[in-house]
Length: 395
Ligand SMILES: C[S@@+](CC[C@H](N)C(=O)[O-])C[C@H]1O[C@@H](n2cnc3c(N)ncnc32)[C@H](O)[C@@H]1O
Image (tube, rainbow, N blue to C red; front, side, top):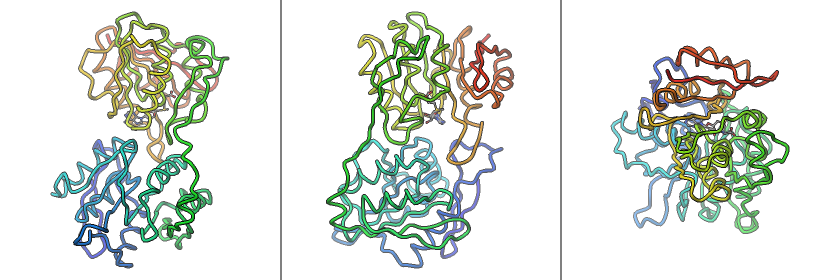
């Protein structure tokens, strides 16, 4: 946990979610600080007017709830695609003695508020996600809406500014301060009226040259909401995994852990329509994509569950026969194997005796060492110069 000093002298204690004592990464950065300082210096009105006609404060992309917690006295609405960000916000509110309902937590898939008077945007890593979020919110924005974005210098590109310009109106940036920058956008009624149609979600036809379980998907339509992993084409690691995917037995419970658009779980379901599938991801957009992809392609009799969650932590111990996992190796810009390691431990807990975890990963990530430590065994099923498919069995 670390202390975040707020403008005016007070401060709040913040942590990422889930809390990991060895994790030295802070739950806020200079861009959060810069934005809050600007709101104070410019005396931006954040409170509702007495008649309720103005003051609706919306925060997009708040990574660990630093902004929502700092501004919780102003009844903000937080919109995020990340379940972890939502849980972090709830935990940080509680940590600082703020009521749970001080912030309205909406996901990227929820209907956005009807009116926005102040829009604060922590620029997301994915331009596509920003595009989708701005386009979904644009009908609620009016010429009086104060729009301020923030991000680290490395995260704000010409394309980021162009996007604000194309969807909302004229946009400029501040000077950099401690490697962070602000974005000021003035909503323009003509731009708002002429904004482009939202291109998300997008679909692509699954390629027809993937052997193994991948062949079952040939030509099928894959749906991708904005910002999800490899939304525009099949990832090469996923492709390699599909070539070597195990076929589950009928009746087996198979988990697609970190499912993205769900092509791994869908391939397993097409190979064994009598299996039961659970699709899990911490991204609301990913789980929505997996569900749409599955419903459009799977046998309607195949049982499937779609859950937004942190890894497999919510699955009943011993309830799973097979886990398929292409783990994440980034948390925002930072490379980390902490999530993969948590997923492996969770998967072991969820598996029954004799159940198997299959993992694809970049060879250099060394997942086999970790799997061997967690499971006491790990076999390389197949490898190429870049990727390995690994299998660990719960003994
Ligand atoms: C490398 S992608 C794999 C996606 C998909 N399985 C595929 O192969 O195309 C990793 C996925 O893990 C998800 N993820 C990241 N952290 C997670 C967490 N703590 N719990 C669940 N899913 C998570 C990401 O949203 C992403 O969809």
